[in-house]
Length: 222
Image 1: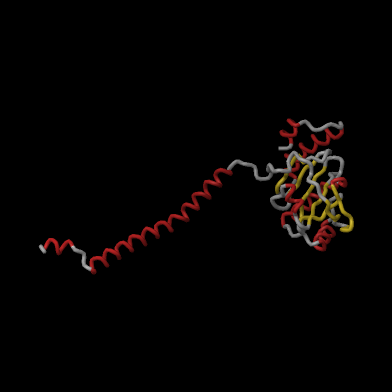
Image 2 (image 1 turned 90 degrees about the vertical axis):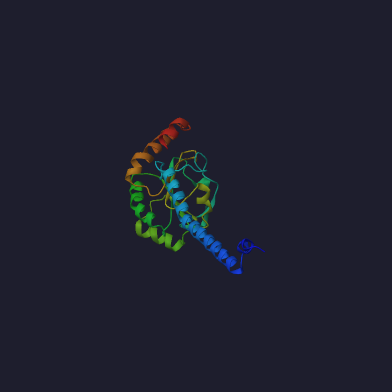
């Protein structure tokens, strides 16, 4: 066998060195991949935020908009032996407010709801996933702005409405159709800029005993 033939054969030591080199290369590649994963996730998050820029955050389109209030049979919060249904809802435009004693933003919103009640605004409350003792204590301490509150202990009715998180408010016309969905607290700012124009349109249609014009609803209740 020629010297060149001997040099071309791999000894066990050479094979071990080659395997170690391949293992190190593989480990380096794995480290690079694990290093890139957080960057990929972060980039995806940035893209998602960019796509949300300029989109409204307090009014959302949901399955309940432009539909009647979902059918329900739920206890009256002040007397759970009485079962309320859609027939007990006002036959004039009103606001349906989802609230809970456990909800910090509801506590912030509550004084303004009391002001609306003093202004003659009809508010129906939906007490969402709350302990009845805590809920009644909440109203006793802060006042009760609602013409009635129904107890949604399971939360299913609120989900049927399209709830994303309390507090939320639904503006309902005199025919029981939901025309506007407010996400988050009601305050003087969005009351004047968004809710009042919609409510005035619905009240005018109800006064004339007609359905509100769809084009006007789209413009005034957006």
